[in-house]
Amino acid sequence: MQFYFFALYFFVYGFLGWCTEVGYAATQQGRFVNRGFLNGPICPVYGIGVGVVVQFLTPVEDHLLLLYLSSTILVTLIEGFTGYLMDKIFHHKWWDYSNRPLNIGGYVCLSFSLVWGVACVMIVKLIHPVIHKGLSFIPVTVGMILIIILGIGLFADLYVTASGILKMNRRLEAMEKIAAELRELSDKVGENIYENVMDTMEFKEERKEQLDSVAEELREGIRERMEEQKARMEEQKARMEEIKAHMEELRVRYEEMAENRTRVGERLVKAFPGMESRLHKEILEELKERVKNARK
Image: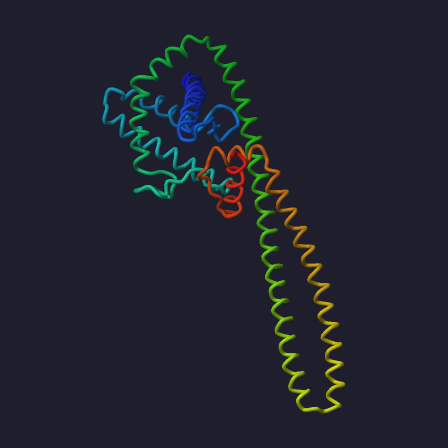
């Protein structure tokens, strides 16, 4: 029966955690934002964190200090491990406490841990008894059916979300490569312009010196040099046109990728405004800005 009730606690507190996050986002942004990692109305980290606390710490609920310290430590460990694991799997940092004092890797910080401890004490002392009593009225058979249905939905949601994140990562990688190629081509254009200018200046200076010598045989050499210079400039001009055409093609592809965002990716960008990509930080920041401007 312990697993049975823990599974029910997971879904109940995961849903309540999602409601809390949505309510907090609404007060901050003045609109509805699905603040969950998954598409559905559940935050698994709340379900696991609070579920573990109420499952294992209810026996010490009469020892207030022990309950508070144990809750703070447990929730901090779960939050830190979850953040670290998601970072390593998806190469994104979903929340960041780096600007807060006494943080560990940006995954956890003392101020939030202390708040989680207080919240867990209130849940264990006030909220959980009511929820447990309500869940006890559900027939076990019905409860098991609910757990199976909700579990299937959860894993399906997890699959869709993970696939969407991996697809977004591939898009970010492709955009990063295009941006790098554009920078490289831009440098080549600048170098060609510089070389043409310098060659023209050197040729003019050389021609002036040769004309000053008033040597007829040199005049013929100057004409030949002018023809060579003209031919080379025409060749460079053609090459520059090819480079510019390729750059325009790359810009179009880049814009298409930036605008054709996946639904999961766009939702996660809205849900986690502090999300940071380990591999494609600048590109992700640009996408976040585009999503923000699109809402205006």
